Image (cartoon, rainbow, N blue to C red):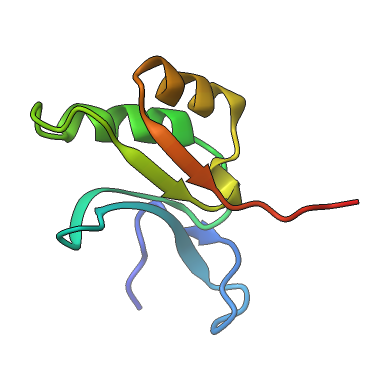
Length: 100
């Protein structure tokens, strides 16, 4: 049995209680190109490290790309992230559930 380095028990519906990862992935949608990925432990909270991840991702983009449109799920709902994107004149759409 292989041991997964950095894996930890987390949400895994197919193998409950098994070690897993909680990845963050970033694609350039126009060309379906994976530009950055982090494989976090399975027990990591969805929002952990999103600002650092986006900072790293933005530095890897070609300099010709002046403006970025970020589309993300509720794990990226973070004021510090929005501040970073707005300071650099990027736009974003983050899908969150409306709660009463």
